[in-house]
Image 1: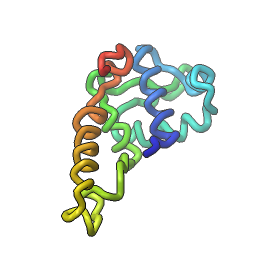
Image 2 (image 1 turned 90 degrees about the vertical axis):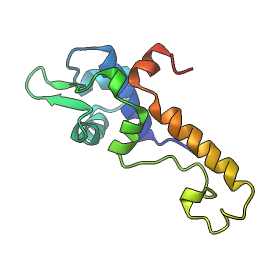
Image 3 (image 1 turned 135 degrees about the horizontal axis):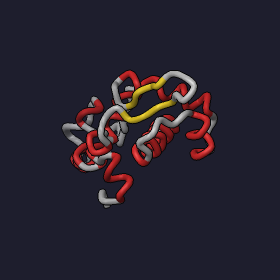
Amino acid sequence: MKINTKIRYALRMLVLLAENSDVINTEILGKEMLVSPKYLRKLAGPIEKVGLILSVQGKYGGYKLNRKPEEILISDVFNAYDESLLISGCTRNSGCVLADDCVTSNLWDYFENLISKKFFNISLNQIISGSFI
């Protein structure tokens, strides 16, 4: 199980935008995150498309949040990129042919359920404040 770079960087980008109410351009974001502004512009597309951020055009343009930080969940970021967190190929949801007879499949189902209920429901506000711990 590994969370890919685009999810990690998109979350970092959203946190920075949440911490600052102003419009921030990708040059500033890139310096803060140590990431190429070009890559950040590419990452912005899907999260803008689903309404998590707004793109502001012009000389002082950049990005800002389109929703309140408490309304943006980790699951929203995964959904924006059409990503999932595959825990194991042994869950009932994975289509494993042995899942019904395998004793450990219950463990993997339980773990997947924990991730879905806890991790995916953490908001940007909770990340910033550390209150998810």
